[in-house]
Image (cartoon, rainbow, N blue to C red; front, side, top):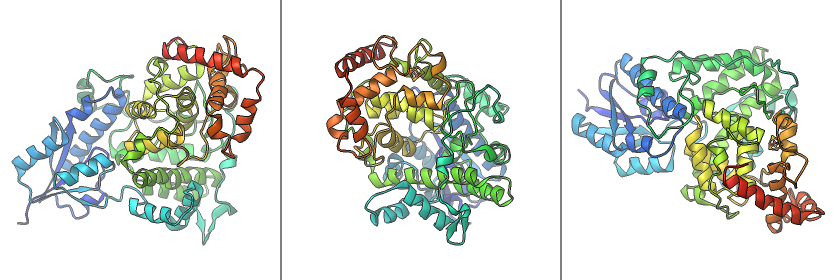
Length: 499
Ligand code: SF4
């Protein structure tokens, strides 16, 4: 009989197609899964996030047992303690893991003598990305995306993109539809089972947010149902309203598949294959298929590559010297008069999820123009979102949202005033503030802080060709003193939870 071997599976690698399972033998190998109490208790996680991750891990363990594997599922003080206890009990000849998805986890497995193998969880390895980046003067996402299209063959007609163009993004920036009758189907729900209920019963006291409802699938079978639902019923409508926000519809035509791709229940290749098949069958317009595939093989893989390329120190960058603590409106928006924040943070509370525009252009935007410390904001997003992972949150918050990397990732900061939010949402209609005003008690805080942000950082951004027009416009305002005074007042109110 061959030597027993352990396959160590991390909570974001829940898929037997990953590298460590390549030659797995249920009659020989033991699968180790560790729940680290230190990790679970370390932060005020959103309840639905903790539940989604732990319940998915436990369901995955059950699925493996049903396939004949011996599974050692341990609740341990730390990951290292879990492995040590496992080694003491099972004496494996070797412990193997698919390459973990964070700097810290890769350092951990190396320190603990775990053999790692390529994972296959992403379509691009960190080495592939570094090789591409090494040949470039600038790391434009669009260039990377086109290379991915050619390399992976999605939506290609020989060497050319189907539909004659690479990118249909300009078709995908429509304002929200008017009226309350929206065409997008309600996302499927799961019935909570015994495993879900056990996890709910043991949620940490420190957790926050609404209780799990079945919104998030915790098995691969249910995640596949979500994929089918998206491709069949939502994808044909995906695209035009991708950037729109509605206070009375949280999902619009978004796929809501990121949690499953990020914890391994779904793999990006199978998701894109399903979209390609639907396009080939003629049931999806090219702009919808392209818009979605770009998010997965372009943006998602690009962010993954940058996380590895720029290393662990990138997370600590703070080029704009932003030091503000997280304002109370991020943790309790109920008494805020800012309708947009009430809606967006309320959605986070209810489901641990919003789509990318509330993240970037409302919550991230407020953090940027108010000068919230990037590490604090990264941590909040990491704690609150069901699909969060370090690799996705660090580049998206530090680079894209807060410009704390000084422009390594995005050539301009994504700062906006009330006019943008009004154009792309229905939030401003019922708001106590006036999106057009930058001074006065009823001035929109976004508008005031937007102009103040430009004035605060005018020397830096006036040199930026994508920002200089706005900065010069700010410098020429007739009331810069009043804007600065109102901004100081807004920041005081924001800090004290009275905005
Ligand atoms: Fe938000 Fe300003 Fe619009 Fe109110 S007016 S919803 S604060 S952007």
